[in-house]
Image 1 (tube, rainbow, N blue to C red):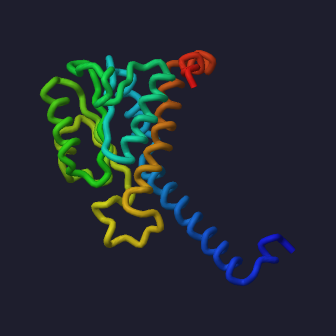
Image 2 (cartoon, rainbow, N blue to C red):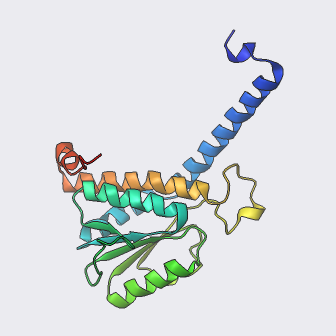
Image 3 (cartoon, rainbow, N blue to C red):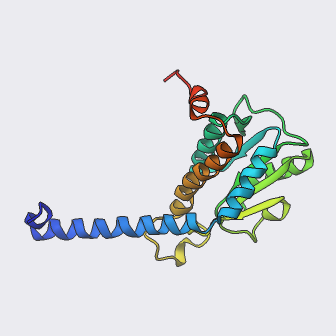
Amino acid sequence: MTRHDRLPGDAARAMDEMAGDAARAMGEIAAAVASVSGDELDAVAGELLAARRIACYAPGREGLALRGLVMRLFHAGLDAHYAGEMTCPAVGEGDLVVLSCGPGRLSTVEALAGVAVRSGARLLYLTAQPSAPPAGQADRVVRVRARTMADDPASAAVLPMGSAYEIALFVLADLVTNRVRERRAEPVEVSRSRHTNLE
């Protein structure tokens, strides 16, 4: 008999329900990650490696995922920055701007896409809604098939709003970074040496 079996009926049912929700949540995240093919991840890594410098931006919780990407790209030896930070340089020809907007059509993302295009930088756009602006301005669009606020009311998904998309971005960022590191063929010790010691 397990500890779970010895729980009172209500508690055991609650644990079963929680385990079921967790399994559904993991399934939603896995499906979103799997919706981006290995070839697409390779192409994204190629865009990053070809860039002179990289600037990333996304609104809300997606922004946390792209900040994580910037950190990992820095560890991998690339010149990566987060737009809005005081140390983010100007972009222009030879640079790459990476934007994410799961539900599509947010004014801040559209504005930054316009700046990137006018400045001559390449634009890589991540979204669950590839038909919504500013996808039409991007040099490369990567569709992550996940629920967002754009389709929230009609969804029976367990993760609310854009959570599956946002969590998938964290995983995809590391999968892309792995490809970048493989192509740069640096020992892991070199990447570790770039990690801050001010923590």
